[in-house]
Length: 379
Ligand code: SAH
Image (tube, rainbow, N blue to C red; front, side):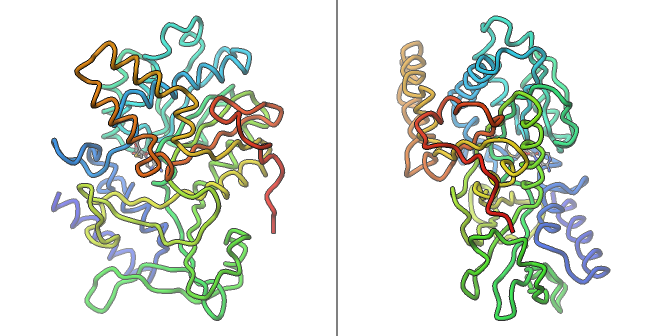
């Protein structure tokens, strides 16, 4: 690990010596996905705080119920779409492959479903692809490098805690307008934050509702997330399908900063020892929904994860599992609570669904007021 830290730091210093400054998004991209020493590229960051460690834990790693319920959501949506065959089942950033394994196990008896599916995983990390291969050994899987490679076909897509790992740019409101926050080298050769000169061109990048935020406000935008939202919006305007995006962040665009580093379940300085800690930022669901709907689809939600999982029947599923394994009953109750309770993951985590324009709300979104199907508020 020491070599990894040194090599990524050396690489960043060389870049900064040459370029003077880099955006926070460039820094985040290098720290997470540099081919040799990026955080995701060389190991398995998942795990509970006790046991063998890990840096963070995600919903599918907390309980099998999460992936099972998402699998059932996929079957239900597939049926509402008229059982397209073939149908792509794509997951973005599958981590250990746990969600997909649970989803496929829970749906294996549904007539025709698995026969129609082509399972594809969008994963950048060779180490995690290997983990996914182990978890999903029994299934025919293909891997893609990026969303742009998803073939043109009916599509069910899920992404859990994928968008929070995509690089964000940060802008600060100054007296002279929006200035981009950048990473530079200080006199001692340490990485540090600085502000680039304000530019009127930055203003159009800021979500419309935040453009006139008070001086000193910091706003994060995620260009990669907006690109993917636009891709999905275009795709769902032409093909049957649905996408389910689950992540943490506010329903409406909100000033930050939210960029944080996590190592061994503890906050960590963002610029310290790049490559050794997970970096994430809150997902701006309003901007994602606007990007997708502007490209031609309908957005449903976001609803909170607690509302969504309850609507899909997590209570019934927990009771079923507890009946067949009474000794696990307490652990199942704890896991259900962790996933749904407002004081745990139930409220911070949101679920957004994207569908073609003429589709009624999918399972879990039925109780909502009319969907956001118009274009964003634009320039
Ligand atoms: N969905 C999993 C893992 C979340 S961690 C879970 O819920 O447990 C983020 C995942 O996205 C990892 O698998 C990581 O390697 C992958 N990832 C991060 N950036 C990526 C990118 N730019 N392209 C493709 N995959 C990426």
